[in-house]
Structures are given as C-alpha cells and as structure tokens.
Image (cartoon, rainbow, N blue to C red; front, side, top):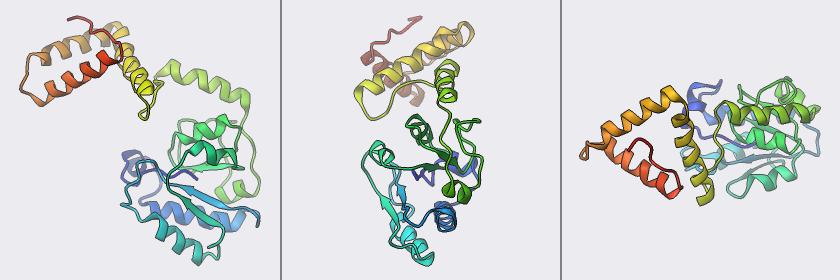
Length: 222
C-alpha cells in the first residue's frame, strides 16, 4: 500500500481522511477482516516523507492491537517497482502509483477518487472484500486510458532524473504556447514580467527560462 504525504493538498482536501493515522487504521482493520491468513500487508512510505507522521510507531501500534504485528510491515525507501513485482494487489489513497500497479496487471483498490478510477481498472468493492477476492484490471481498458492521459493534459517526465526533468519542462512550456489563445497570453505575461528585474516573479521567470534553455526549448516571442 503506497502512502501519500499527510501534508499534501490532495490528501487534505480531496479525500475522506483527515490524518494518515486514519488511513493506517482502515487499511489494517480491513486486512484483518478480509485478507487470507498467509498474506502480508506492506505499507510503502512516500519518497518525500519527512516523519511528520510517525509512521513506524503508528503502524506497529495499530497492527499490534489487531493481532497482526508479524504480518504488517513498513518499507521506508527503495523502488516501488520492486515491491509491486512481488505483490498480489495494491491499495492507494490518491496516488499516481495506482497507474503503476495497473500497468503491471495488479488488482487495485482506491480509497478515494483516483485519476485512474475508471470502470475495469479499479475495484468497486469495499477494501475488506477486495482483499478477500481481487479482480485484475482490464488490459484493453488500460491501453485506452494510457492514450487518453497525454492527449488531455498529462505531461510525461519525472522529478528524479535529468532526462525526466528536461522532458517535463520542455512539454510544460511547449504545450500552452502551442494553443493560440493561451499561448499568446502566456507570451505577453512573461514579456511583461521580464522587465521587472527586482520582483520575485521575475526571479521565477528567470529560473523558468534557464531550466527551459537547458532542456533545449527556445523562448518564443522574445
């Protein structure tokens, strides 16, 4: 179960949970109710987790109270792909890792609305029932979903590699500029703030253009 950041706006304002402790409690309670006795629940800390939520002691406390101290674990660090490779299913709370699980053909239960929460991709069963009987995602539906995302706004790239950052920055600049109305508005805005050398906004624009230049993106309208 990949965890989100408890301080993230998506978690705080677009989900059913107020705290990460609530997520852990529901996840472990459903596991105790529905999972086969030879299964283990593995929580995966978010890569940017900074221990504002004491995950390890909280998980240990809740698991011990449920009689599952030896079957519930926390992984802090490492690659999500390696965990998913040995998993029989995944549970998420507003996490892009849901798409990673579906891509690997893993059954997925989302505890809140997900971008990938489409029929045939995400289970519609309550968590305990999902853990008892997991249905795999529809591969053809996911193929359509993967074509839909980049066509409607999602930008490819990542924060963790130079190549991924360069790709993301390039697309983030090129896509709005490619649209006639929004592109012209963006050019005028950036040109206007370019002359305000002492403003915080100009610092952002300068850094933005610097990163864009390193990514091989030309500045238009200059």
